[in-house]
Image 1 (cartoon, rainbow, N blue to C red):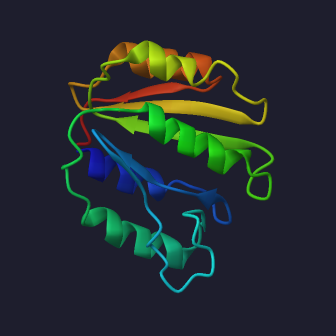
Image 2: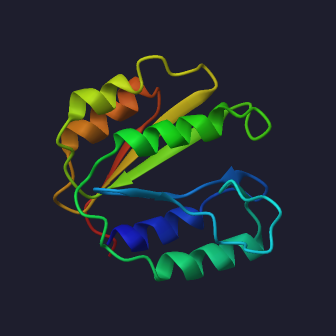
Length: 152
């Protein structure tokens, strides 16, 4: 269900915005291969009809093989990408999660010094996501928390 939620989410982004996708679990991956011919190799893409089509094709191949829900390093990478002002004067990070985090306090601490240009919102997906994580991350990130229990 997380893959389907991500596909729906991608279709709701505004044309021209910049986006990145970081898959996370016991390990993480910043996806840098949606547009292989692009000169931009840092995993930040401009949203267009073409990038949407290629991204949706890639997401369809995503496996659910990342294990648990370790979020600290993906948050560090997301902050590094959004700290680069050539991409965003007002950046948004969206965390879509369907699992539980073992070390919540460490994850929460990553948001203690959030820069003013950055907001973080969360989407809890399915019936087994960490409700507290979804709520606290959104609160600390000055964003919103959404829950998607069923996509039908």
